[in-house]
Structures are given as C-alpha cells and as structure tokens.
Image (cartoon, rainbow, N blue to C red; front, side, top):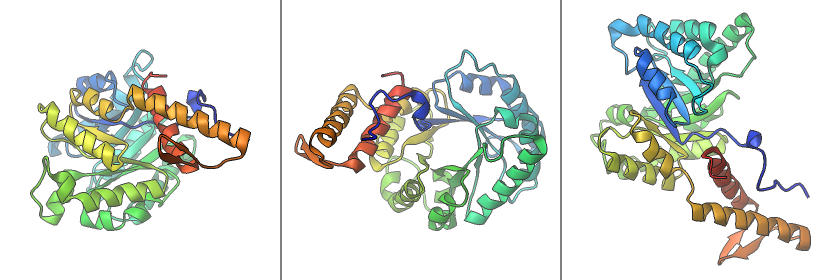
Length: 312
C-alpha cells in the first residue's frame, strides 16, 4: 500500500494561494510592507495600479523590490509581478527587463486580459528565450492568467492547459463586468457572475491548477471582504485577491480549515487507510458520508493548507 501519511513532509504540499496581495509597482515601501504580510503570494503590479507616466520608472522599482527585499525573516510566500497587457507597448520590456534583472527572485508572472491560449503561448515562448539567455532554469517561472473578458471565459479550458507553466486562473471581476456591460461589483456578484466564476473554477480544476477569485473593492469594509471570501471558498475557489493588507487576515481565515475540519480530515484519512490495509476496502461510510479516494484529495488538501498555516 502506498498511502500518504497524514504527517507528510511540507515539501510535498502544493503551493497554497489563499491570498494574493496586489501591490502598486511604483512604491518600494508598499511592496516591502506587502512582503511582510501573511499573504501567501504578493503580486507587484505594473498594470492598473501604475499611472501611464510612471510605467518605465515603476518597472525599475519592481526590479529593486524583488532584488533587495530581505526575505529571510519574512513570512514565506510566492513572489510574482504583473506586466502591462500584451496589447500595450509596455509589455515586452516589462517582461524582458524584469526577468533578466530579477528572474532568479521570481516565482511567477500574472498575465492580464488573457483572451485565448495563444496569449499564454506567446508569453511562454518569450519567457523561455529569456531563461535561456540568462542561464535560468527553463520553465521555473510560472504563469497565472487573469480571465477578465467574455472571450477569456469562453476559452478558459484551453487557457488553463496551454502550457506546463500554467499555475492558476484568476477571475477578474471589474474588467469582466465592463466587458459584458454589467454593473454589479458588490454583494450580488456570485449571483450575476455565477456562470463565469464556475467556468473558471472548472477549467482550473480540470487542468489541476489554482483557481483564484477577484477583489472586494470596498477596501475598508472587512465584513464585505469576509462575505465574498466565504462565498468564494464555498463555490470552489482556493483563494482570493487582496488589494489592501488589512484584507489578508480576513481572506486567509476564510480559506483556512477550522480545528473541527482538520480533526475530521485526519480521522477520515486514518480510517480510510486502515480500511484499505485491514479489509481491502476502497470505500466506506463515516458519519453517514460515503468516503472514497476522491474524498481523500479534498481532505489532504485541507491538511496541506493547515500545515501551511502552521496549524499542524
């Protein structure tokens, strides 16, 4: 029997992306503060958060942040950046300059306004060229795609599987609403955009990559953020974007299993492994719930998140 023990090593856990904290790329101090939070991922932004007149300067500031922020005493996290859109005149220099100067310090890039798999393949090939030129390990820098248009939603499955670099899909609420002519940006978004959000989740899960929900715009309304995060978690997203450090603890809590959920996961996995060893059973009933190998995937991920959160 090759069952994975409950106390499996952290090194075998998948990356956890409960919270992706977006931070303006023009401010070194704000990026340093973001790195000091408990966010699982930080995203230094060169797109929407940076004024047109500051694009080139912000590019150099992002490089400075990635190469100078001392990470030794900071909470562990993934470091990413968002270049400007592929259709802009800034994109290629964003990618080349940042990766050449700071690629060794990057875990991934977040590509905005991805409409079809060709967009991802273009970025993938350019990344490969830069890695080869700079002597970086090929394919190490991951790609996350922002799905924020009707075309992007329709092509979500192909986008998710476009390249082995793909690490996640992110639903971009504001741009998607603008693209389809909708107005809802608040507490009823899970009703009005249920199809689009579900499509992103299913596409990501089918490709075995992360699926992340978008932002809560009411920065000071932490109750709204808590509501949106809870809904996203219940729907199947594994994380959510934050646009202010104050949102990070609220979002983390929504995507972190409770003590009861942790105990239940441990009990289910232990019972299943014993049933397999002692009786050769591949399915059993616990608390009136049928448990099989598919259930274990959910429970093991709960425990992986608990370990990442320091609860185990």
